Image (cartoon, rainbow, N blue to C red):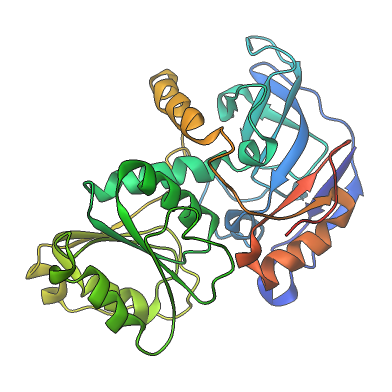
Length: 336
């Protein structure tokens, strides 16, 4: 089978040039494991963290390592003690997803309905992340939420979940690449002079909703400082990424005098897999996202042997939509 592999740590500075497409032996599942025939794999920011050895143990690569940390495919074989049926569509939350086949412990698979769209299945981590982030804000209908990095896949999902709950959103973007208002954003603001004044006019106490109640941020830097200082009494800032290399700075009173909090979010199934108690939640997320009215922008589909172009496009123009690696008979034509 073919797989994208690497033998040493990589970085964005070299364009992750250590990655290479290789022929490797077909794996076989052992007890408690499943052989998955991959159909689609998302290229996520976490994939680059994994390749760069920035994940903590036990999520560090073991060389030689197959790349990719999330994908979707079908159960091809199952080891002893596994009950999931062959042919089941599953989300793969495990390393080794950039390959035609992967052996995965059964507990790290999430079974999905047969008709669930493959691109949504391949990045199901993002649906769960967006759902969790919005829950953590504890926002009520009519309150304001700012999404810093509004073109990101998670922010676009957050926008749609917020619309379902009647929460008003302001998406902050460098440039409007997607029609975020059509997806449910109340306001979209491009970064630049006067942007914060415009934000104040939209979310300030006199604008209805009682001010800015929450910020969800994957960027960081000075803008995060400015946003935290605008939080209303009891407001929350939740951090789940850090694209800006600069630090953010705050004084104690920026938080203390308004009872504001800063939290971090790590994917709930990063260290431990879903358990029986999670089935109801996962089913709720599936039902909220499986229909055509829940949109995920697709920047392009690339066959596995075209992985280099997919990575380059992701690094140079991530706001165009997520890139996917496809396997087998899936259409490899670029979109968007």
